[in-house]
Length: 81
Image (cartoon, rainbow, N blue to C red):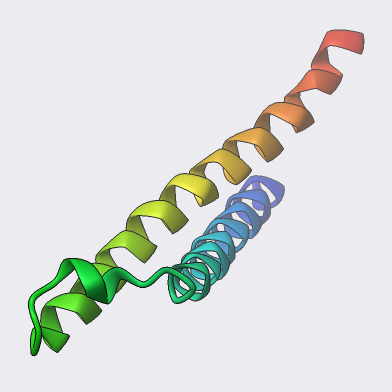
């Protein structure tokens, strides 16, 4: 039973880390796009909010893919057992 809790804790740690890392990478990547041209002048808060929301959206999607892919690849071994 203790091993089950340990695995759940490790999986949670990997998931949280993946979300933080991929949201950060998404935020960094979005900085390379000149989104400011789509907004009206002086709308700094809206531009920053857009970057944050898009970073969370993209980063969460990529993290979900990463977590699912990792989980599926670990379960492939059950085919051969």
